[in-house]
Length: 390
Ligand code: HEM
Image 1 (tube, helix red, strand yellow):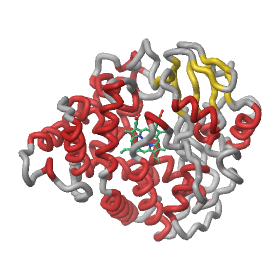
Image 2: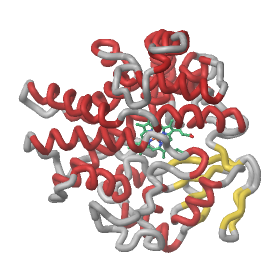
Image 3: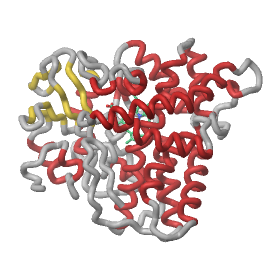
Image 4: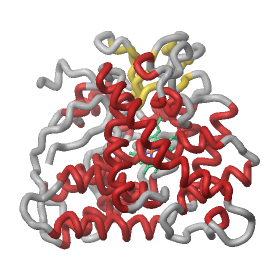
């Protein structure tokens, strides 16, 4: 694929999208892309302005839920995710969700990820990259959500089906699979959430101390955060518990995969955690996100009209020389990097520490085992997540 004719969506899966992004930053930092039919925000100033704007929303005003899943369990879950909603109720629920994730025990998550990785490698033979990248992060979050063993594995499989409904390119088959998966995930997680919320005052699931490192502590934390806020409706909490799994899935797989590729290309960083954090910036697992104008928005003399879309190229802004010196160099331990991979402002990702902890643990185990991935992978044909086939 030629980098001269590529769109910023096709760039996600190029072997090296970064020269293309650098040209966008230098020459078209905020411009309308005819081929995409959308505005593209590429430099740090545009990305910051777009993500900080109240009139640019995460869903089109006329279609809060994709038509293919409207009226199904997947549609109900989707429509209650803080990731997919704006407004006062969403902001309040975001506080509850972020409160729970802020207290998640990342050391326990790392311990689980390391153990699952060792188990996955114990059989010998081909390295099970699919399981290491996708399955293990999902199973870790499942355990934190009270689903261990077979239930955790089932949740990890179901979330793979649920996320199929999220891309704009989802087919009727994808939407059908997502609807079945959403219903099953509610059956799996609902009883855990009910038990946490029904626990009486005093010792019990609801009152587990933060960071207790126990299976189910994340949902107990969700109930506690809801209590603190006076939030009583369990339905949106259950949807966002499913959201913990779906938000983990592709993104953490990309972070693990892209770190393994950096190592295969000869990166020797002794501190795996520092390497993972710099890969977040340098080879972002989530390369872009979208906004939909509910009103008009002007930046640097250009105006987005109501109804138009903006593609926000996080991975390009990460390499804007205006915010990160020597931006194309992978520099583990970089001082005060400016990173857009986890978004910014109202919808900023509350799962960063958990994702970095899990990815670091998986990669550490692979390094210890002396395993190396390919340096020149193909990338999955996804519109916003950069995930190598290893
Ligand atoms: C490398 C891994 C991850 C990356 C790169 C990532 C990236 C992002 C980005 C870019 C957003 C904002 C999207 C937007 O504004 O349009 C987001 C939102 C979110 N992420 Fe993550 N994420 C990761 C892992 C996780 C994990 C592990 C969790 C939780 C278990 C999580 C939970 C969330 C939630 C709940 C939101 C919605 C926040 C909101 O809309 O207010 N993420 N993530």
